[in-house]
Image (cartoon, rainbow, N blue to C red):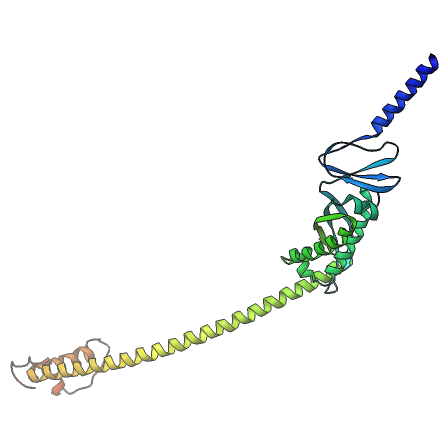
Length: 293
């Protein structure tokens, strides 16, 4: 009786072990590869409870979520022979467990070294054909697109789809920093000198144009002023002659008084004249009305 009980208990344990060994769970974020004696026989992507042959088949679980791998910093030579240290990260997911198992192996983390090598090779190839300005300017997006295309094509053979490749940091090697800064400063100075030269040339053209316009305006103004002055003098002479013709006697008296005012009015002029000089006639006696001098 004891032997039967022990046998039944042993059989129950075996059945339980077989039962537990035949059941596995695939999570919503995972996928599974079933191997039989090391040979892949099925890929399971549907989440839930599944069964397999105990002791014969093995379940290898893979995460199908987006994962990130930070690749180490390394020094590369750019297309303009400048050296640059870059590091960054790559985002990927396992999309084909069978291909992954056949090319990489059962370890989900084994792909990291492969990805680092692929990213390093692709980055060197792309950066070798681009200048430092392209990598550090808005053209950087085009550079990253080229790197992503090469990495994605290489990683497809591992059953992995690469979603994105990014450069986190770029820096110059210490021994090259001063030289690069000097070249950049020289280039900026050259551009500044060129802009100053263009500005000076434009200023000279503007100044020359302004001087020319000024000369033309002054010449026209002087010509117009001379014409107006001549017309005014002609009108003045005509008015003066008309006034003289109206009363020559008064005009003679007025001219003599004007001569007194200008010649004797300041008090510091000396005239040597005889007392009976005609010039002093209005000082001796007032002019007679209507009398022509």
